[in-house]
Length: 309
Image (cartoon, rainbow, N blue to C red; front, side, top):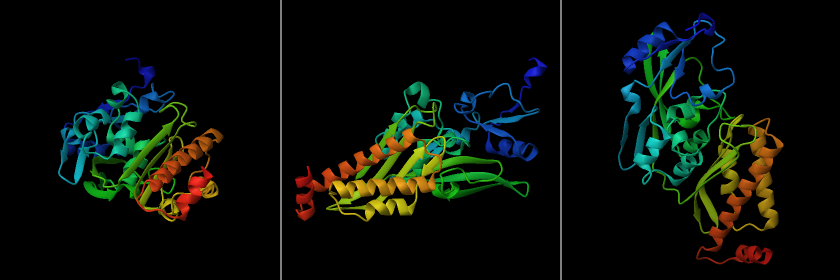
């Protein structure tokens, strides 16, 4: 190949032991899963860097494994979204299945790995927020004192308050563990093109247990691919602290409170993203209102809501 293209050096380990040996010699390497994000970036090839080192993860058998029991499913980081749907569609949480399907057809989901969806820097997939509110965890491998270490982390702990990766140095997400959610209400909504015009896209993942007029264990993640995702206990408490159904004024107040807290966590939200966020939150609140109206108990709040309708 022409020297002027500055072709990178490609390393192809066949197991995690070989991967550790390569990382020890080339600690500044770039990890390559399917490349669906890296190769879509402007000027991704030819590289502007000299002597760039790339480690392809495709040949590491351990990263392609999948196992499950009656409580959890565990995926190697090279398992694709399409493989997850094929193997776990009937057992995985609905919010996760809907999230994966929203990404596109098989041509797309067969090129997105679970590890890449979580670990890619400069881009935040909606899957990161969805898996976080499902209390997922991940195994991270990293070099320490010239030895490869492996440690499990709750997924929320590897992101900062804006939903961006908060790990220094080269690291590998080797496995992701997903709990089978018992939440009775699960909703995923997205708007805008995936991986294209990222400053326009928004997605909202929400789970909870509606019981009579309250929502217990509410969890919400609002993702902006170009900025990060908003997910915090304070954000969850906004939904858990109100009694449904809400009238017009109460609904508007809750929508505005969620949006304001989101903007405190995520800076740089575009006007279009803001409008889309508010619309999605409005849809979820309406759903929760309807759910409260179908509960067996009757109360004054139901009457107030029906009078508003």
